[in-house]
Image (cartoon, rainbow, N blue to C red; front, side, top):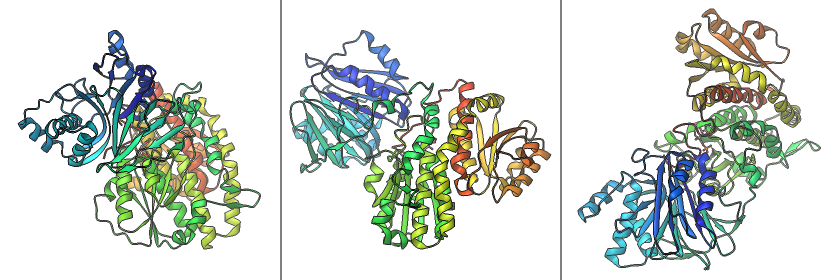
Length: 614
Ligand code: F6R
């Protein structure tokens, strides 16, 4: 979703801002813009519909000099994607420019009042209302920009990360945050501002994660000041970011998504590092050690997540229920937050999120927290909002995920859920030592088995050609592989725009079977496990209706291999670890279909990587 970048210092701001916007492209957007104050104190605002490269072309004959500026990628919410609605937005007097990520919910009411006061609006956005409101407060109260921003934000309901330039104060950026991410990088006599650390790490590793309901006064040559809306000073904590530039580049792969699929063996090894001791045969999660009583006392786990993370949550349910014998509910965060869910202090909520910024997951966990639940976070983006709201948790440590379609984060989430289930089950005594040891040993083998799967990339690329012109696909799985079927279908539809549905294989008879004919490809996860015989029957049912079967089977399989039209052979593993292996060919299948169709794999239409609005 919307991305924010800002710079103030001694260098030319424009190249830094553009590079920053490119680094944020992964978030998803439909227009871009920049505001700069040049050495004559003139404020220039330039905007373009489309990509950051369109903006760069648009400004090629414009004055983009200046040592201070703000820039933005917009993902449309209020008003269509067009130049007028792109950010930055001007105040009526042309003095202020603002960029914003979030939604001002009461913008209609404020806009009505401002129109009555004579303000003229040039866009359909909620953001323009905010900049006009700041001007209105400045005019009517005769206060400084800092006070005007504070007073304006007190009137606003909603979520925001903003940055404001005032051409009368060309040595200052005012930024503020509530429920939308904002990071400030501290350089030598210069400051950087961004929605996440990615645009910043190239220049400095020292950052401040701006807290909710605070504003930052960023002045060249002065110490950074953080104030709340009542002007109380806060002491910001400077953190060190571990990101490296190599992690933010494609490293020879044609797309980030493919790079991230191929990184999975290493990511999973990193995720387990220091958490599994093969010598001692044990799993150690610091969160479980530190909060043992609270976690072992859980009467129920509630997993909250969205999208791919929700699919990982479903696998978490299977793992926790079978190993720990505790009931687990898996909820869409967006539904949970608007129900009146029954939560007791004995509940443990597990919030899963790659970005750590998903607005619905964040709001749902805050609700659960308010109702007394203990909150455990499973996130990837270090320092993001969700981990800061949780009582404890585990990072998945898979490195930045830039492709919009989540891949390595999913397998990282499933790995952490497996470690969590193992650690808790061992403490509870609900798993036999033999089973515990067996899973630990097999986890050690998973990265190598993932490598084996990745060797089939070329074969899967060939196979995927036959789906290029399919209009619908069905994905079937059972047990631990049912969520994998959901995830496989999601991967395909989000990047290739082909309609795909995932189902528990046996559920097919209750409706979807009507869709099956000779035109319908059906992807079936049919690895050797306790439900193998059952899935063979489901395959027969599809075959009887002439559906085309693409089966994922365990190496050496003879039964399904004969029934299927196409087969992908996978190394065998334990049933509870099957998702870590079976997901990979489905990621590759989705990826190659999209490439064959010529789609923008890393930035599919309408999608945002970090869904910071509800
Ligand atoms: C799909 C995908 C999304 C995210 C969802 C939640 O490939 O990436 O479905 O999984 O938007 O995002 P996070 O995990 O950041 O909370």
